[in-house]
Image (cartoon, rainbow, N blue to C red; front, top):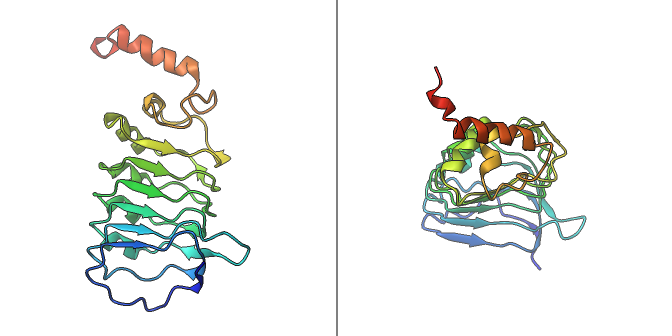
Length: 196
């Protein structure tokens, strides 16, 4: 039951590999971890256990310097924005930003995260189109994408994304209209790509 804020400046732990202080009541902004270049797992999730807890503000673009990062879990906080630079973290396997206060569009750069196994942006207030770049995840059918709870995302989702088995809107008539999916199946079965 740690309470309070994270020290700033944060101690220079250059060789830190894993930092997990989840499930506490920490408030304030995220620390500057740009010098922790060997960090592989960062879990500061679930700080919003009372009205006083929850990390606030923006996720800094400085996070893009953590190029060895495999897990970034900042779920259940009060964060308000995240940068497109997160799309440069090419080793990232888990990105969980669910249950925050994000109210902007989803950066298309996240579709460049080739190693990603779990992307959870659910239960925020994200707006606009689901990026067409997310269709890239279909080639890696092990990726799970969670976007439910963002009531202002536009319909429909990118067509190819609707064929990702672990996309939480796959069975949504609005995000993945069955008639549109049927047209794709017909086009492929009729070898439409060979039409002249």
